[in-house]
Length: 422
Length: 215
Image (cartoon, rainbow over all chains, first blue to last red; front, top):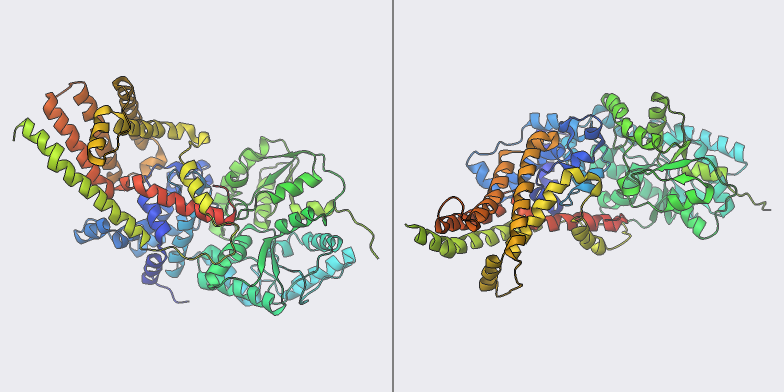
């Protein structure tokens, strides 16, 4: 993809739509968005005020799409956006924002600031300014099939290990089954117990499912970059696989941004509706619970809390299923003070955990999550996103907190009621 | 031009021009926004989003209690301003004469109370722009000007009512002129939000509703 400053400006002009124009028209610089942003609350640095992250875009909007702005431009009262302005914006749009969208929940005029930051990223990427580590992750996904760059063989080895452990055969490229399961790289490399866990849950529930050898990675660095062409290529890989295998339901794994990419953005970036449905794994499990096909035994008696991943819960609308499932297997589930749509971000999403230069900041802003967890006096934090899980584990270790972190699927598998079937 | 002539101009042609500019300007702003269009949603939605669009327009007006320190002054100022504009008896007569609708005004002592409350709220928001780091870094000259043109009608109205400063006729003329300045500023400044906040909330609320996110 060829890039240049002018292309960046052209993309920014192209992505400004009616919602963005309404947002810029309505912002009164009240600064409330800062109060909702971990990067401001945990550092006290006002440069991280969310609406500031899209200032170059605001100037382009004003100069190109408003009569007043055009008049100001003619009179020489406004400065055009320069290459340096875009370069300076990289830190704010990419390196200190997880696109968690908490700011959107408090804006008095209702501005969806993350909607704008995502478009800002598109402009910066078109100008060739996307962080190198994100670009590298995108290249790995396109060339090798996964965000972390592991080949199909690695997944196959994990599948074999899970088969050996559970005694259940796991399908690859099986057509006409109920579900196509996608995973995130972190699940394959770090949290691969999920494969065996799901194999057992699905067997007990009588669900038929498969992996695809062409599309097993749900992670989408193209989305974080704001590179819609790359994002679309990754989505198309999944769409093609599901179509070839005649599968009507695709499962997005325990990964917030993967869900956002495949469930909500996918059809829009490829330009057509899907011929299949997409569910977050937790939605699938909750549906099985409703149908009486997911049966568990025993309750965790320890104090357990849940961390809602931004992209699945606040931005993606999956808020209740995880609570239904938690109530099945815990007797002492405690909500965080701010939860669901108002939960505080772990600090590692939106590509932040991929961007090396952002590491010290990710560690610093974890302080908010630490405070949230500390006040609950819990033993375990459960979540449903591999990136959150990773960030939580690292933050908890860094801060010497004595807390266990678990994926919700894994917790359910631990309590799965296994009925003997012939 | 003596003070009587000034008052007559302000009440007559001045008000007509300002009203025309405000409505014409706001129409342009709304058209500017709508003409950019909104991309079609191709993902399978959970809901049409209509309900949440409307809910967002209404519910986002409720105070975000967890940030009460940050928002109280703005709430007081907005509520006070609306009360003063729409329920001061002479104002209601003006609306009756122009639009033909009369809803009755509130006693002067109530209006006086809300005027003082609004002025205090506005002064606080100005101070907050200086001492709150996030507001300070966001604030441009245009933000301070927008504040000023909103503040002037409140103060001049209060002064005219209490016969403070200039003679009554001149003060009333100055008050009306300051309102006209505000009306002209609305479509060319951030004060446009008086109309476009409904659009911003609609877009966000309906988008969230489609995804099953509570507004």
